[in-house]
Image (cartoon, rainbow, N blue to C red):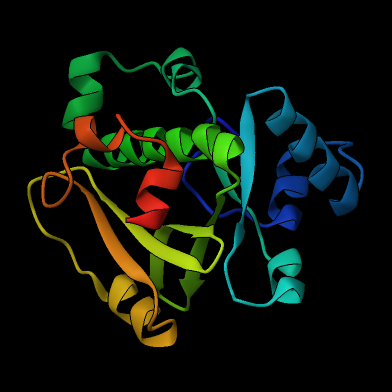
Length: 183
Protein backbone atom coordinates (compact mmCIF):
# COMPACT_ATOMS: atom_id res chain seq x y z
CA UNK A 1 0.00 0.00 0.00
CA UNK A 2 2.86 2.40 0.77
CA UNK A 3 4.35 1.85 -2.67
CA UNK A 4 1.07 2.19 -4.56
CA UNK A 5 0.21 5.41 -2.70
CA UNK A 6 3.65 7.03 -2.69
CA UNK A 7 3.27 10.79 -2.97
CA UNK A 8 -0.23 10.74 -1.47
CA UNK A 9 -1.59 11.84 1.88
CA UNK A 10 -3.45 8.96 3.49
CA UNK A 11 -5.14 9.00 6.88
CA UNK A 12 -4.42 6.14 9.25
CA UNK A 13 -8.15 5.34 9.30
CA UNK A 14 -8.19 5.00 5.51
CA UNK A 15 -5.18 2.68 5.75
CA UNK A 16 -6.96 0.60 8.38
CA UNK A 17 -9.90 0.22 6.02
CA UNK A 18 -7.61 -1.22 3.34
CA UNK A 19 -5.66 -3.53 5.61
CA UNK A 20 -7.53 -6.34 7.31
CA UNK A 21 -6.53 -7.12 10.89
CA UNK A 22 -3.97 -4.30 10.92
CA UNK A 23 -4.65 -3.32 14.52
CA UNK A 24 -5.21 0.34 15.34
CA UNK A 25 -3.85 3.67 14.15
CA UNK A 26 -1.05 3.61 16.73
CA UNK A 27 0.08 0.22 15.42
CA UNK A 28 0.01 1.52 11.84
CA UNK A 29 2.07 4.56 12.80
CA UNK A 30 4.63 2.22 14.39
CA UNK A 31 4.68 -0.03 11.27
CA UNK A 32 5.30 3.03 9.11
CA UNK A 33 8.17 4.07 11.37
CA UNK A 34 9.71 0.58 11.07
CA UNK A 35 9.30 0.58 7.27
CA UNK A 36 11.10 3.92 7.20
CA UNK A 37 13.98 2.62 9.30
CA UNK A 38 14.59 -0.26 6.88
CA UNK A 39 14.56 2.05 3.85
CA UNK A 40 11.22 1.13 2.30
CA UNK A 41 8.47 3.71 2.90
CA UNK A 42 8.32 6.85 5.03
CA UNK A 43 5.35 8.78 6.31
CA UNK A 44 6.02 12.52 6.10
CA UNK A 45 4.38 14.68 8.72
CA UNK A 46 2.45 17.82 7.87
CA UNK A 47 4.32 21.05 8.56
CA UNK A 48 2.39 23.54 10.65
CA UNK A 49 4.95 25.35 12.78
CA UNK A 50 3.40 23.64 15.82
CA UNK A 51 4.72 20.35 17.19
CA UNK A 52 1.26 19.30 18.44
CA UNK A 53 -0.39 19.74 15.05
CA UNK A 54 2.48 17.96 13.30
CA UNK A 55 1.92 14.85 15.42
CA UNK A 56 -1.83 14.78 14.70
CA UNK A 57 -1.50 14.95 10.92
CA UNK A 58 -2.19 12.25 8.36
CA UNK A 59 1.08 11.05 6.83
CA UNK A 60 2.12 11.60 3.23
CA UNK A 61 3.55 8.29 2.09
CA UNK A 62 6.82 8.27 0.16
CA UNK A 63 8.94 5.36 -0.98
CA UNK A 64 12.60 5.63 -0.09
CA UNK A 65 13.61 3.85 -3.30
CA UNK A 66 11.61 4.40 -6.50
CA UNK A 67 12.56 0.92 -7.71
CA UNK A 68 9.71 -0.30 -5.49
CA UNK A 69 7.22 1.70 -7.57
CA UNK A 70 8.53 0.15 -10.78
CA UNK A 71 8.52 -3.34 -9.29
CA UNK A 72 4.86 -3.10 -8.29
CA UNK A 73 3.68 -1.42 -11.50
CA UNK A 74 2.47 -3.23 -14.60
CA UNK A 75 3.45 -0.28 -16.84
CA UNK A 76 6.33 -0.26 -19.30
CA UNK A 77 8.61 2.78 -19.24
CA UNK A 78 6.83 4.25 -22.26
CA UNK A 79 3.41 3.70 -20.67
CA UNK A 80 4.59 5.23 -17.41
CA UNK A 81 5.87 8.36 -19.23
CA UNK A 82 2.59 8.66 -21.14
CA UNK A 83 0.49 8.50 -17.95
CA UNK A 84 0.92 12.07 -16.62
CA UNK A 85 -0.56 11.30 -13.20
CA UNK A 86 1.59 8.21 -12.65
CA UNK A 87 4.71 9.93 -14.00
CA UNK A 88 4.13 12.99 -11.83
CA UNK A 89 3.76 10.83 -8.74
CA UNK A 90 6.90 8.87 -9.66
CA UNK A 91 8.98 12.04 -10.11
CA UNK A 92 7.61 13.50 -6.88
CA UNK A 93 8.38 10.21 -5.09
CA UNK A 94 11.93 10.31 -6.46
CA UNK A 95 12.47 13.84 -5.19
CA UNK A 96 10.98 12.86 -1.83
CA UNK A 97 13.17 9.76 -1.60
CA UNK A 98 16.26 11.87 -2.32
CA UNK A 99 15.28 14.47 0.28
CA UNK A 100 14.48 11.89 2.95
CA UNK A 101 17.58 9.78 2.33
CA UNK A 102 19.99 12.73 2.36
CA UNK A 103 18.25 14.54 5.25
CA UNK A 104 19.49 11.85 7.60
CA UNK A 105 23.05 12.97 6.91
CA UNK A 106 22.71 16.63 7.81
CA UNK A 107 19.76 16.86 10.19
CA UNK A 108 17.32 18.46 7.76
CA UNK A 109 13.66 17.77 8.57
CA UNK A 110 11.34 16.94 5.65
CA UNK A 111 7.60 17.61 5.81
CA UNK A 112 4.69 18.32 3.47
CA UNK A 113 2.17 21.14 3.79
CA UNK A 114 -1.52 21.20 2.99
CA UNK A 115 -4.32 23.62 3.74
CA UNK A 116 -7.72 22.95 2.21
CA UNK A 117 -7.03 22.68 -1.54
CA UNK A 118 -3.52 24.12 -1.46
CA UNK A 119 -0.48 21.91 -1.08
CA UNK A 120 3.30 22.12 -1.11
CA UNK A 121 5.01 18.85 -2.02
CA UNK A 122 7.83 19.15 0.52
CA UNK A 123 8.96 21.53 3.25
CA UNK A 124 12.57 21.48 4.37
CA UNK A 125 13.52 22.76 7.79
CA UNK A 126 17.10 23.07 8.95
CA UNK A 127 17.63 25.28 11.95
CA UNK A 128 15.81 28.51 11.20
CA UNK A 129 15.84 27.94 7.44
CA UNK A 130 12.53 26.93 5.86
CA UNK A 131 12.13 25.99 2.18
CA UNK A 132 8.93 25.13 0.29
CA UNK A 133 9.72 22.61 -2.47
CA UNK A 134 7.33 22.16 -5.38
CA UNK A 135 7.97 19.39 -7.93
CA UNK A 136 6.94 19.92 -11.56
CA UNK A 137 7.30 16.82 -13.73
CA UNK A 138 5.96 18.29 -16.98
CA UNK A 139 6.62 21.27 -19.22
CA UNK A 140 3.41 23.05 -18.28
CA UNK A 141 3.36 25.42 -15.34
CA UNK A 142 0.48 24.38 -13.12
CA UNK A 143 -1.00 26.50 -10.40
CA UNK A 144 1.44 27.57 -7.73
CA UNK A 145 -1.39 28.47 -5.35
CA UNK A 146 0.05 26.22 -2.65
CA UNK A 147 3.46 27.89 -2.78
CA UNK A 148 1.91 31.34 -2.65
CA UNK A 149 -0.32 30.47 0.28
CA UNK A 150 2.55 28.81 2.16
CA UNK A 151 4.81 31.84 1.66
CA UNK A 152 2.08 34.17 2.91
CA UNK A 153 1.70 32.05 6.04
CA UNK A 154 5.47 31.62 6.53
CA UNK A 155 7.01 34.78 5.00
CA UNK A 156 10.61 33.93 5.93
CA UNK A 157 10.46 30.70 3.88
CA UNK A 158 12.15 30.39 0.52
CA UNK A 159 10.57 28.72 -2.50
CA UNK A 160 12.21 26.10 -4.68
CA UNK A 161 10.69 24.64 -7.84
CA UNK A 162 12.23 21.38 -9.03
CA UNK A 163 11.74 20.18 -12.59
CA UNK A 164 11.45 21.61 -16.08
CA UNK A 165 10.24 25.02 -14.84
CA UNK A 166 12.86 25.42 -12.09
CA UNK A 167 16.02 23.66 -10.93
CA UNK A 168 16.59 20.75 -13.33
CA UNK A 169 15.93 17.37 -11.74
CA UNK A 170 19.48 16.13 -12.47
CA UNK A 171 20.98 19.18 -10.72
CA UNK A 172 18.62 18.84 -7.76
CA UNK A 173 19.47 15.17 -7.26
CA UNK A 174 23.18 16.05 -7.29
CA UNK A 175 23.03 17.86 -3.93
CA UNK A 176 21.78 16.73 -0.51
CA UNK A 177 18.70 18.21 1.12
CA UNK A 178 20.78 20.38 3.44
CA UNK A 179 22.25 22.18 0.42
CA UNK A 180 18.79 23.31 -0.66
CA UNK A 181 17.75 24.15 2.90
CA UNK A 182 20.56 26.66 3.34
CA UNK A 183 20.87 28.41 0.00
